[in-house]
Amino acid sequence: MSGHAEQHSDKLRAALYVVATPIGNLKDITLRALEVLRSVDVVYAEDTRTSATLLAHHGIRTSLRSLHEHNEARATQEVLRELEAGRAVALISDAGTPAISDPGALVVAAAREAGHRIVPVPGPNAAIAALSVSGISGPFLFVGFLPAKASARRKLLEGWRSAPYALVFYEAPHRVAECVEDLLAVYGPGRTLTIARELTKLYESVHVCPLGEAPAWLAEDANRLRGEFVLIVSPAAADADATRIEGERVLKLLREALPLKDAARLAAAITGARKNELYELGLRDQAE
Picture 1 (cartoon, helix red, strand yellow):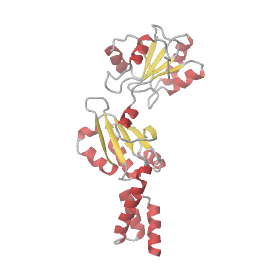
Picture 2 (cartoon, helix red, strand yellow):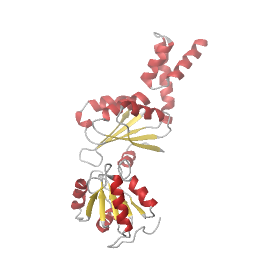
Picture 3 (cartoon, helix red, strand yellow):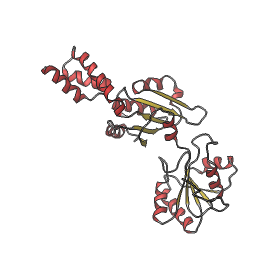
Picture 4 (cartoon, helix red, strand yellow):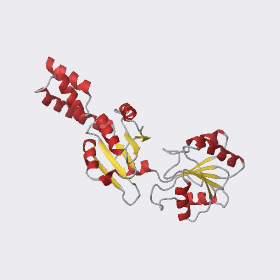
């Protein structure tokens, strides 16, 4: 693409500017984002206290108002009135890109429906940052935060068991160990898990290991459970053959001591292979 979406000027055209902000390190903000935040008439922020720190750090004195999950419907109407009055409005979240596992989608949709311009001002995003250091290539599915309840979480995870792309999740510190246990239970030990914690911050860490080793690694050090997490599970297709082969190997060992039904169930639990496929394999072996 060539040229500039916005001409540099003291007064921006009336529009809703969706501005990405740092996910931890205050230096990770683009020059264009700073220019927009200085030039708009008002900035709507998820948490005005957090955003005030960012703006003050860069010497920006633009008026701040709140737009968060609890007031998004009401604040959306305020934003529409600002736009209708010909003002330039910026939308930011606490960290990263607005409307990506954060408030913002409602106001963007409403502004577009009302005929106003929507201008993306791209920048930091935790999911993309984590993917860039995971070593995983190819397509991915961004899920964001999973449900808090274990039953709902596992039900969603089951639906992506055979997905041929990497799965990207956000998770909070108080739930990350439970979430990883569910990932292991649903996807088995053979898939690769990237645990990206506190990206761009002082205690940033990125650990890559087989999913079967992840719970023990987290439990070794309480500090590994602190901070905000991005979890990336490798694609099913990359590991399907290895999981199937390991399942068949374990099944043969267990068949020496257990009935086929029990052996298939345990082999599936141990390796992540499909129980029904192992059971059918055992039946074929018996028939031969």
